[in-house]
Image 1: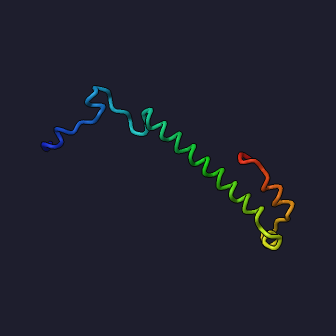
Image 2 (image 1 turned 180 degrees about the vertical axis):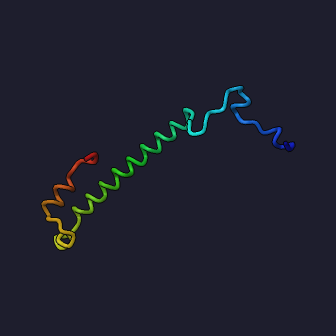
Image 3 (image 1 turned 90 degrees about the vertical axis):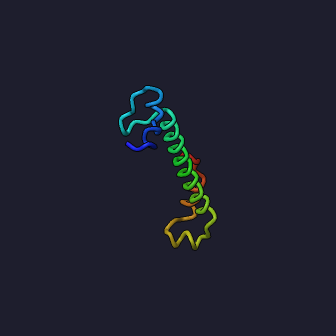
Length: 83
């Protein structure tokens, strides 16, 4: 073992706690995972909302090109964020 290796100890070694098996997260890791998942879900909802608002702004010719009637676009555009 080299000299630098003798000075490096993990936090669990310093506290006398056993190291966690790979794949397990501590509390902070789980919080980060939950927050990340929540941010992705909110981003998905907002992206869907932007698409619906874009439908409402399209002209009749543009809607006809994609095969959607004005009534269908309006019905989709007024849906709540969570649907």
